[in-house]
Amino acid sequence: MVLALAAGATLVGALPSYAKITGAVVSTSGGTVNVRSGPATDQRAVGTLERGANPEVFCKARGELIAGHVRTSSTWLRIGKDRWVSNAFIAWSPPQDVPWCSAATKAPTAASVTTGGGELNVRAAASSTAGRQGGLANGAAVLVQCQVWGQQVDGTAGKSGVWYKVGDKRYVSAAYIKWSAGLPWLGWCGQDPPSVPRGGNQGFITAHAPAAQASDRATGVPASVTLAQAILETGWGRGALAREDHNLFGMKCFGSPGDHALGCRDYATFECSPTGGCFDMDATFRAYASVEDSFRDHGDLLSNWSRYAAAMDHADDPERFAREVHKAGYATDPKYADKLIGIMDDYDLYQYD
Image (tube, rainbow, N blue to C red; front, side):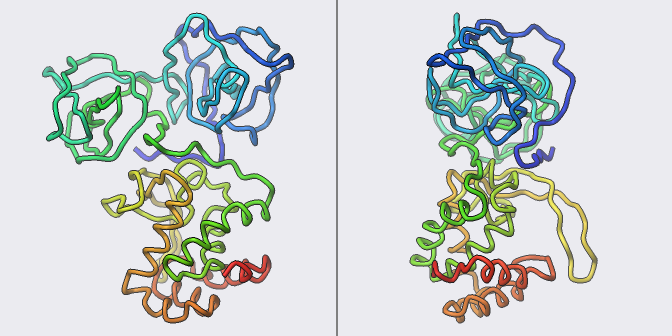
């Protein structure tokens, strides 16, 4: 299944037909809290909640990290159709286990074991050879915290390299877990919360220039080209791949997350062939703990792969470097190098080399 999110978008769906979760209490220093159309502050404000209000909650999703009156949290709560509030401003009385929201419909979705009859082993790490930490019966409910990449398993729910963390040093293979209303958009264990672009175009450049320069020092890849590639690939940080999984360069998995990424996730994408035109397709991309890891992986790729050796021979000439990278097949867009050079010129990215 391909999970593809537009930048910060919330898919429209009917409200789920199940019991709403009560016990949520809005807690602020005295004012109101904004209700958003999606789980981030760059999404449209669609209302407010007064201090002490008791919204009914449907499910939860991963979103922008918020330092609120109750806690600092990247969890957002769906309280209606296109209505989200940060859990950072919610006190619970009594505490509740809120289900994840389905990525496709935003309905609540619950995880359960599906083995066909036998018990599912719980492991101390994401491998069937790791120490056994007990077992879960077929049909048992599972409270999933986050996901990790591990041993590829072919199970009753499908074939997957994803494992779910269900407690301290407790992991189960996603290949034996079914979701009642479809997969949620889970974060990777240890991953930074989704990125939210701030400060316009210059804000993006200022925020990412240090990582580009660190890559330049470590690998020799010009920071100006790296920044231009990040801008072009992500639409100034607005693309879902950059926001959700901190992948700023469209780095694909090809079966493995490599040395710098946390795991692999499917996205819908658009590709162009030199001979066959352009077309929609599905692809598996690397997911990173942070944007810094994405920059380092990108730099290592260009500096270590022999196909980019000609580009590295011109690392002191960013424009020539961009054309050689394109010529080596880095991107399928026939105007890729021209676009990079145009961005470097328009924003004087050479100053960061």
